[in-house]
Image (cartoon, rainbow, N blue to C red; front, side):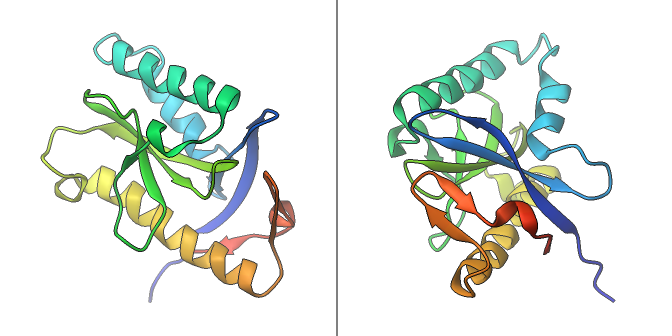
Length: 161
């Protein structure tokens, strides 16, 4: 039997240019981005990388979620990206839907050549890939719509990954 994860989308931050969301799995009510922050905000070893990611998010809020802020990470057919674009060990995985909409996931320290070689990072990327498929199905059904920089109707549904 395959155990499905139940996920909701929470609004994290919004500016004139962009809306940032994050996924929350029903187990604990904490978003994936909040888990990332809790793990790394006080971590002295990765503080420089963490600050780069926060600076990138601030720039995204100011300017928009332009491609140049992101590192392509997932497969060819998905929207999985990572922050930061510069070198560093720490990665935050997210879905960049457009210049106006980003869904933040979780992340961690990349000590392997690829994220697939690290079970924890691979799990975060797989969750985002599954989430994107289900979200796009809901958009196609008309349950969720993209209205400029907002995902309309997303707050009313729970997605089974």
